[in-house]
Length: 113
Ligand code: HEC
Image 1: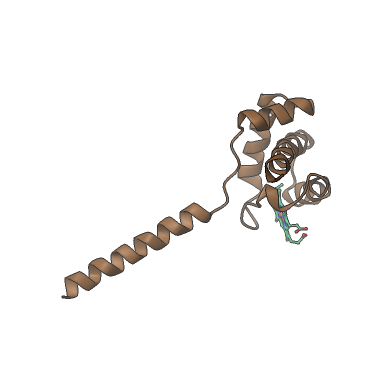
Image 2: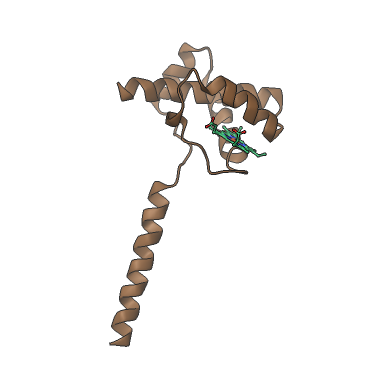
């Protein structure tokens, strides 16, 4: 009896962990569409990759990694400005981050309709 209850509790815990992992925000992958949106804005893949790395390493230090689709492409530049100052990013890292976010935001908007 007790062992059964234990197994149920363990399963519940496991299910909770899995649910949690699947809802955590992760940095978007550089899909073909994101790469194309970047190129259309003059940013090559290497720039997008380094922007993604900056996003992953610098933007989840004070709060959870933000969801890019929560803000429009028009809203992001002011946010990146503010947050890169808070993060004390180098100018080149800020530029790569902005390129990555803009490319993702453009695709998000396109897929949202
Ligand atoms: C030093 C701490 C710190 C770091 C690092 C940081 N943020 Fe923030 N962020 C904050 C605080 C504090 C707020 C809420 C108050 C505000 O908007 O200033 C916030 C709010 C936000 C918001 C919500 C803004 C809104 O208007 O709803 C977004 C999006 C965001 N941050 C993105 C980022 C990104 C992208 C990075 C990486 C460059 C980043 N943050 C790094 C402290 C930080």
